[in-house]
Image (tube, rainbow, N blue to C red; front, side, top):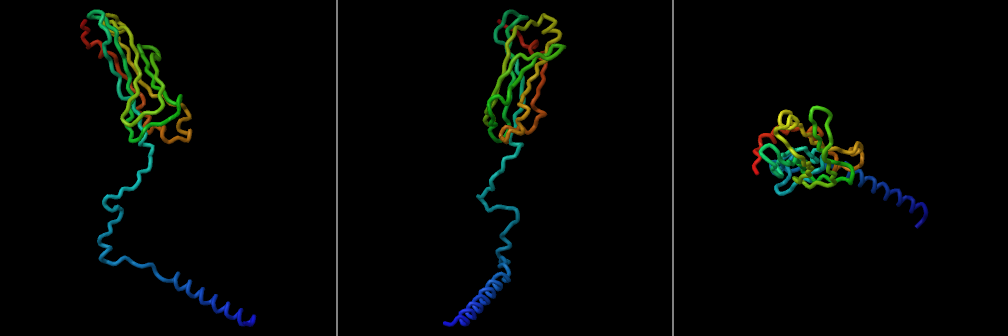
Length: 196
């Protein structure tokens, strides 16, 4: 075949190819038949299919839940050895996962003046619905003004490393920081009957 014939054949084939591609591209997308359109509901997945849930910050939620008082040993009707216990609870939907040293539960005692740290408990990972506890024991005397008349307040705090929100770990970014502190009066101890 001569060179001119080859060139002509190549031009013809190229033209046919472009015409075919243009025709395919120009074709409208198929429409869904009317009968089928009635069964399709917007924003609803087929039954039995669930979309994956992305982790949001609200899924990570630790709360300073409670401060509990109990009698360990009775000395007499006015005196006893008591236990003050703070409880932190993971009420989030996922496990709190962190590195050691980034978070601590702190328990303070305040009797008029500055708060005094009486106990602390470091923690790392907390499963869903699990708790972290910190406790302190002391002698209690209902007849003493310091305990009976002016009982101290106890303060439970979840303390985090200042850089915890920028450490690249979303699983330790506590969502609601307003519930990380709880204060309770120990006047409740004076209502406990000390029985030997």
